[in-house]
Length: 230
Image 1: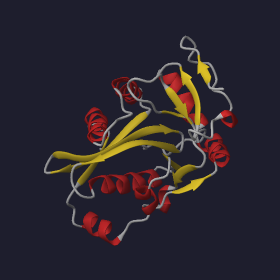
Image 2 (image 1 turned 90 degrees about the vertical axis):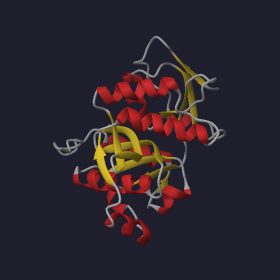
Image 3 (image 1 turned 135 degrees about the vertical axis):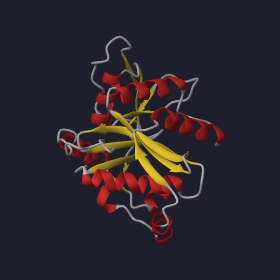
Image 4 (image 1 turned 30 degrees about the vertical axis):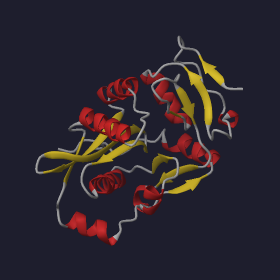
C-alpha cells in the first residue's frame, strides 16, 4: 500500500526502501512537499521526486539504480575530437535558472515533462541555498546545453540535461565528471537506465548497494574548492 507523507511535517522520515513497488518500479510514497528539508532527506535516502502537473508529488527509488563514478567516464573518439576542437566552453553555476527552464522546455517538446513549475521553484531554492548546481555549455556566448542536479557530500545527484547543438550536453557531462573527480566526489546518481548514459560509462547496481554507498559518501566532505570555479 502506497505511503502518504504528511504535508505539515517535512521532518517525517520516508518509509524503508523495501516498501517501494516493483510495478511501477520504485514508487515509494506520495504527497508531502518539495521543501529543501524534504528534498535533501529524500536524496540522502536514495529517493527522488518525479510526477506530472496533474499528479500529487510522487517519490521514487527504482531498483536497480544507474550510477557512474566520475573517473569511469567513457569518452568516445568523436566526443574527444569535439572537446579538443574547443567548440564549446563550460561554466558552473552561472545560469542555473536558464538551465533548468531549458531542461523543462526540452522535455515538453518530447511530449511530457516532469519538471513542473513547482519543481523549478523548489530546485531554484536549493540552488540559492547552495545544494543544487548547474553546468552550462556555451557557443559564441549562447547557452547551447547544460545540466543540473543536487550535491550532497561526495555524491552528485543528476536530474536533467539538455542540448541545442550536437554533443553539447555530452561535453557538459564530461566537464562535470572531470571537475567532480578533482573535487573528490565518489559517485554520480543517474537514476534510471538509459542507453545514452550507459555509453558514457554508467552502469546499474542494486538499490540496496546504492543506499549503502549513499550512507557513506553523503557524510564525507568534498574538497574545499568544490563548485568554486572562477
